[in-house]
Length: 521
Ligand code: FAD
Ligand code: SIN
Image 1 (cartoon, helix red, strand yellow):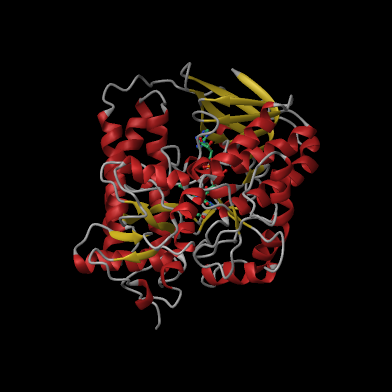
Image 2 (cartoon, rainbow, N blue to C red; image 1 turned 90 degrees about the vertical axis):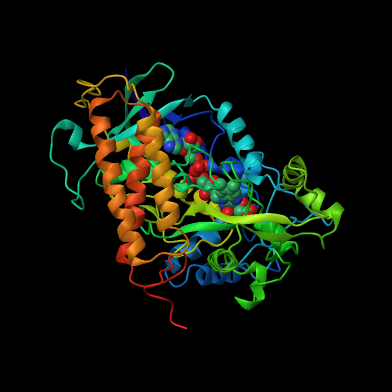
């Protein structure tokens, strides 16, 4: 089957949905998403969205905090742009129906998170992402120009390569004509031709064994664009959230929002010692890279499997009002967080790197945009400031929409694209080959390419990944495409990019910490 659309969007998180709502006034929109529409990293966002909408806070302070967290690697112009334009974008999603909590004086109830010098985070209790998804999907539902196809899995970006031409990395004029997508209900691969395409496929957390990201976060967009010879950047900067609930056997890991530490909770070792003050004057509210590394160090020194987050000093009423989902989760495992401490561990949480884009979300492939977590915009540098991700997604989806709407009328569909070729492939008869390799990849990445790295560990990880890559590509050649096989391929590519970027960076900075190049003290 072949569909023609003006705007193709891959992904139904905050980036894909907001872009859709904007471009829909200018043409037909086809939005595909690999499972149910709401399933995304966005849905699980707890803490909220950072933004300066009212005083006494200032844009300048938000810029400064973002630059400090980014450890000298942010693009300052982009930081200024996102922070200043962000306020307008937040107002827009409020107009579309998103409800943020307000305090008694009618202003926003702003939370504080690690690395922020002031309370600045708008939120909807502790389920902000769920509220944003709800509001945006309701707005999308009402729009006649937007077709949402759930259970459609994007396999590959279509370029000249599919017309039989040679395409080389870092050459100009590589053009995106749309995507091959698998309708997972029928099993058929369809061709979607578009004038403009937005990749909004979110994060990569599933590349690691312990992650806060849902199972959809397999880095598909980043891997697809890389295969299409697009440029991918900063992949070594993988953010580990310091406080995921320690609950062996549960995957993904449940997050205990940083806003809980913002409200006064404190990290302690198993024997009750407050340790963060010894690592950073900001204590438990230092930026995430510092806190996650300190926890990792304490666990290794003591041989412990977790540390505690002590909320017992917090007001019960306040906690239950602000963190009802966290409270309910703790209670569901028999733990009252106001009486006993919560066991927590760091878990892979966010990818600062991704598809390199300019200030309009344009990748180096013509007519291909990227926004949200899959994009590398220069905002986060070596470490993302808490709650800046939803903000970045809004600003870049908006800017990508502006550019797309301007250029779309002058772009023609490419009619010479062939149908998907599945010749010589057959149904997989041993799914274990896929599931085993997925587990092995997660193991290798977690053991060797985690919070603390070294040359030897990275080399070992690369050697293992080469084997997994060879096995998986061989399987791909002879097997009918399936989401699980495509995801495995994509995760191996992402793992490879993380390792290669980590190997290339001969310093410790932000989220990339290597014992071979310790930070200058
Ligand atoms: P996502 O919301 O992840 O959406 C990606 C979409 O792409 C999904 O619909 C997915 O199904 C689809 N997709 C992926 N691959 C394919 C494919 N091959 N074919 C078709 N569809 C595909 N950030 C903040 O700023 N504040 C917070 O408080 C916060 N809390 C967080 C808490 C948790 C537990 C997690 C996991 C993340 C949190 N983050 C937070 C980060 C933030 O939620 C994400 O970075 C952001 O929501 C990403 O939005 P997105 O639109 O880029 O991608
Ligand atoms: C959290 O609530 O701690 C997550 C915030 C974020 O990832 O930005």
